[in-house]
Image (tube, rainbow, N blue to C red; front, side):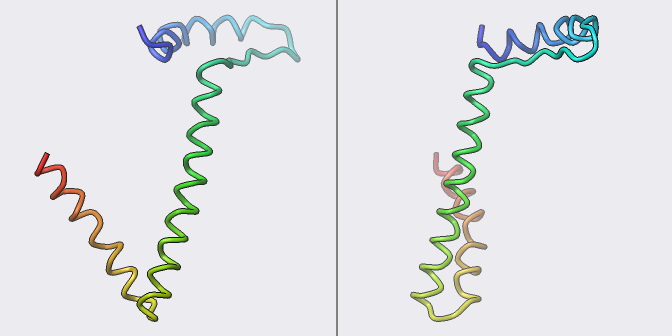
Length: 86
């Protein structure tokens, strides 16, 4: 069983247990879930920087602002073709 599946199975009991705490106390879940959240946050930052840098590079190469957006608009079609080829 994956850790995320075990956490989802125990979530209802954990919420009920947390509600029995006195005021001022709370339950925090760490471990693998926290590390996964940090990893996805870092990945989102890297993807945003990468897309920005690619757009700037294409803009410099084409000397025009619309042409890079045309290239980016073709990306979904390329993904569909790649998935179909697989």
